[in-house]
Length: 414
Length: 159
Image (cartoon, rainbow over all chains, first blue to last red):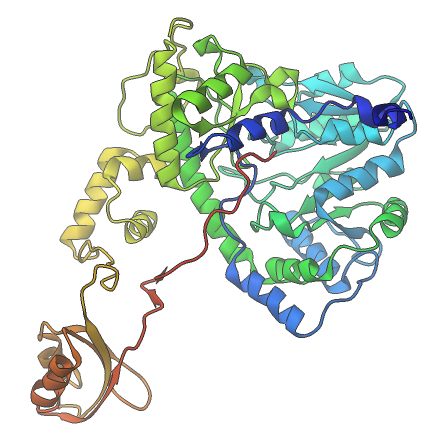
């Protein structure tokens, strides 16, 4: 009998397992860990949302919904997008409810890509982007971003990466893992490149509501961009609803119809129970969401302060709930840093190279954790980097964080 | 200022340094603001919320509905003051509706609370009637769920 690995679709076989998975197993073997490696809110879904879901079950809402999702949910989403960004989608034909943004992304790629089509994406980026493109038959083309440019995607770099096979530009700002956001002007520059080369833009804006010190710019709301943009978003991060798996895609009606075709034959519809909860979230969850954002923002300041004190350079994240400090001053690789920190101090962070090669030299620290846990984790981490020869900064009251201030200590001897 | 108060209401033990970091403010400014808030009695007191049952200490509390005859010039305030001066009284609130004052009283046992109501509270001039309701169980105090079964169920590492 042929081995199973010979039977597998070679595309699937050759996709390497997620770097995060390997590390996850290591963390599970270590008791008493404080984890800053969690990519989801530490808040439980607000009670009024959970309660609305319980009520929907009591009322017997246990059926399929329309393929596209509950009409009232699509209307509410359209209303939210119009109010937040002034971008108008027809809830009847331009919005599709999916099982998380992950499904929406997969549908979009499958509906768009022919074998060999190229998809440009910033790197470091979310671990699923590249595999999703590969499984849809496309070719992921990562564009490295770095600390110098604040992990922003420069239009010139996009321009340079375009080939005759380039079909899609995938954006994700605020970004996981870096916490970078794009300002309006940088996005306008990128929009011009997309227009010049007639690219489709898929914009994953799952962290849009978690933007600090400024307002999020929705790619679809830029002049002329709605027509060529597929806007992806969901409820996981802003309303602390990761496990409910509700996302959505907005775009041109013909394209949404194509995505719906795949969705209808593979998923049928997103679970009604979760859609009912999402409806409650989008109609009445605004205030609770703002309270959570306020708390993330306080922790964000705490985290920036901690890294500055311990002498690790970290650019100021303006979105999501991640900080992405540079750890090369310790003389360790990202994976060694994460593994040693876990072993010596029982603090879990995610090695930056899990998000692509340009993440090497960095680790991702999620500040979706209680302030008590954050405080203790940073005390331990400070001890750890000091042992690795990083000179802590002597400080000071809490002045506004200035990235240039972060000074490297000497690398090397522990 | 509002944010400082919110943080302190949630955790009175936060230091000015910690608050300054979280709110991205100058620590001296935070100290000044807190000092001012203490001086002008916006911050009344820093307290600890205790689960006395867990500490093994017996306590009984009761909500007493009190109906009053308002007095000329001071309305209900005069009688309210005579009531809230008693240390057994934990809180006093003027209510709309069927009665006037909601008085929370705490004592070591039921006898002590009953005694207070019978001999002190109901004999105050201006008190028409009292209705005493003993607390059987407390589920939530000052926004804190007393026995919260919810904990962090997240996987330790997720993308």
